[in-house]
Image (tube, rainbow, N blue to C red; front, side, top):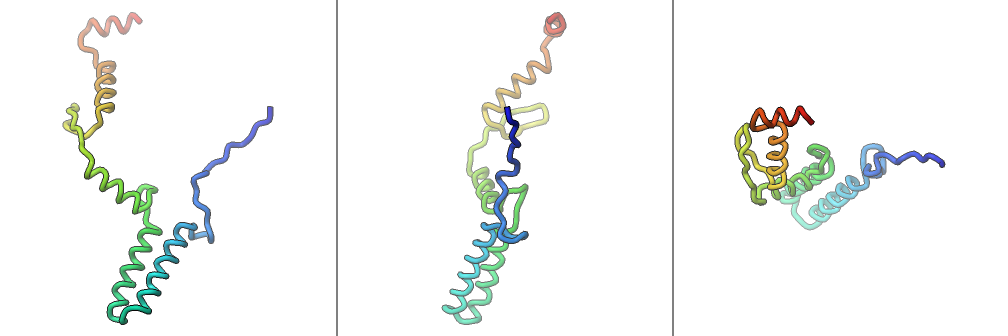
Length: 127
């Protein structure tokens, strides 16, 4: 049977030029279009601060990544975490937020790692 190579890095974004991906390019083009519209519709004193805010915001959205996640996605994660309810479970190190499944798996793992009596240890060694 023929052996085929497995493609790697299939989630890499396509690049227009070596430094810009399609996503980054279109974000910057959109910000440029907004800046151009502001230039023709507003007086210069109002246009300049709004264009600066537009440029900084577009640059942040296009280029800033935190832990390989875009800034928009990261912001949505932060808001979701802040809004979502949390279940605090006691651990030996103190309280920590965890889901019910994590709490159950931790207690099951602690039972395996920390037997309650010497009888449990003897039975475990016999196996």
